[in-house]
Image 1 (cartoon, helix red, strand yellow):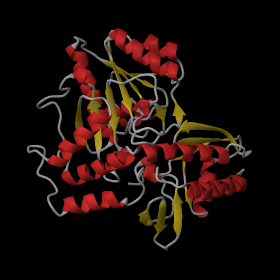
Image 2 (image 1 turned 30 degrees about the horizontal axis):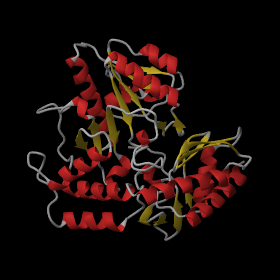
Image 3 (image 1 turned 120 degrees about the horizontal axis):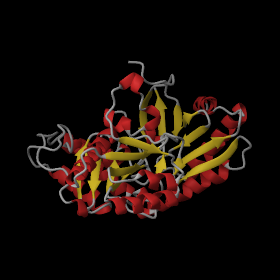
Length: 380
């Protein structure tokens, strides 16, 4: 089905920050497959783990124990909220799990019709409940009737968020930096308002770290640099090291979270994907790599901030939104960059989104910045 506006390129091989098309042409990847390949393409440790596990056993379902899944869960929990985790296969599934969990928690508080509050311009997924928490895509005319119980508020209005939280609120769901909207960090005062109002109402704070997690913003999880700590966190994309892995993690205060019969997934925690995720987590937890990624992010900022076609640079670490001046179309810039061997993303006509692998070198940043400047010259 024609659901994607595909560029006329087929990529067939990758190594680190470099990818090659079917004609043998080399490109520098500053998109990472939508922040999936944070450890770079075909990282040797991830490839070895996948190969080794594939030669042993691919899975026997979640009706039996699997050491890779247990190890992955332990690493996830110990690196984040300290409670428990449910493994799944994607970010949308992780958010669906979080939605079920917070609704169950609200029913336990006596709320018959719980509400979940999300921010305008948020993106939480394309399955029906996750879509309902994604205000700009939740179209009743195409996909209705959509699940009820979702409320959106402006992303930059702490007072509006406080006012929206009431006795029926089950949770507030927030991306610390909105990625699909064009890389918009959520202000500290909004995050603090969400945390305080949730505490007052007995509601839960959910951080969607599907794009901001796994080192993307310069720390393993974005919550490490925010002024608040969530009760629930969702992760995916780079978590699987290139394979489909998602997770919903909870704090110890939520006990077991979902219990027997509440939820399930045939492929979740499969040994091959879990082994890849273990390696990805360990690689991207390296303090030296995280520090280097922050440095590379600053180098990109410094290299682009003075260009006349650039009006602003938003984001953190290696999650950057290059806001373009009036009259400059990001889609034309992205096409020009691709033609010159650089892969970037245009999430909307006003923004170029940069998501390089965290293993990107200073020399590769210099090359990428120079190529993007040339693309901006040609389109600006």
